[in-house]
Image (cartoon, rainbow over all chains, first blue to last red; front, side):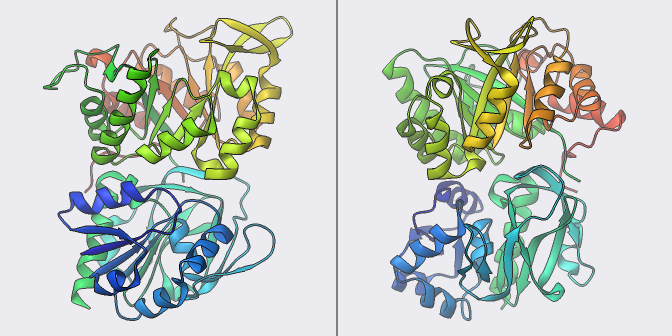
Amino acid sequence: MIAIVDYGMGNIESVAMAFKKLGYDICVTDDIPTLELASHIVLPGVGAFPAAMEEIAKRGLREPLRKLAGTTPLLGICLGMQLLFSEGEEGGTPTKGLDILPGRVTKMATQEILPHMGWNTLKISPEYSTFAPLEGKHVYFVHSYSVSTDKKWIVATADYGMNVTAIVKKNHVYGMQFHPEKSGDVGRELLKLFLKEAVAV
Amino acid sequence: MIAKRVIPCLDVKDGKVVKGTNFVGLRTVGDPVALAMAYSQEGADEIIFLDISATNEGRRTLFDMVKQTAENVFVPFTVGGGVKTVEDVTDLLKAGADKVAMNSAAVQNPSLIKESAYRFGSQCIVVAIDAKRFDDGWHVMTHGGKKDSGIDALEWAKQAEELGAGEILLTSVDHDGVKTGFDLPLTQAVVDAVRIPVIASGGCGAPHHIAEVFKSTDVSAALAASIFHDHTHSIKEVKDLCQKQGVNIRAIGLF
């Protein structure tokens, strides 16, 4: 069973549907015992960083999610990926993230128009050979903030007048800045990679 | 580099597609969900539904359609038409729409943009502008392009951005339905006025019009309706042509 964390920040249905179409049982929940039973946990998210952390705190999910990240494969999507990091600057003052991965979420330093909205190509880091078939493939982005982190966690970037961190991975914690659930066949392939690698852990 | 988006638009009334119902290969004629699935498989980068239902019954059918689309279509989709309140926005997003487009109601009540963007984020708020050429520039038209608001379209685009719009869907009232190509000067003027993505709409009568608007302006996306209906031209045909002419476009197919 795949648990999709419900913390009141939209866009959960389409993420749920994408996994359902891959043939998995899904459960949309904020219940900690249910999350503990899940084979995989997905943290979706659309909206603002501080509001999202507030909702997570309100539900008492911060520490349980940090703990579960050590035992259960976890995928953060879009804002959900950003929340995995140490700190976000959205909203002016820095907000503490889940701090599962080291790094900061900052306003994109690009001359291009924001939000970064639309289909952009993935540039896969050479050390991540399992992702190599996805080199140059288009995925759907919608965001104005992006992650700065150590190169060693970065699986893929996208070029938008800057190097945008697109996929991160540390052990079985994954983050995707774009929306795999809205990225057609390529997105489905990426979700499968998460599900496959995770099972082998 | 980010790809230019090709977006088919479907006019929907009481849960049925009102134009282009003879799409080849579909079992259910006029079914918007089936049509959206077919378009996405052909390579549509996004889909826009425009609801023109006049009755409450029709609106209710719309929500079912949005829900089914969310369950079956794995590219982003926008729903517009008759969006008047934050509750309308909420309902459509809850039903599974990725973005909601607002038009006349936002002109009458600009705070609708602000409140919706505040609550759901700019990324899902599309402001649709119908613009028509006058001696003193382009005016914003409301009520399906029939009523002159007297508002300058470029100023309104800027204001919409300030209020929190994430994208502008720009329709040229002069070019709409004429099928001689997009309104290039209007499109570039609006692109220059704002820093959010602009979708060009109105006037597309052939695949080369889409290539033309991408090559002649800095627009992010192009919308077309009639050329895709009845399968006169396919999305693949448009994308192949764009690619041949050097436009950066999302390739179709996985490997």
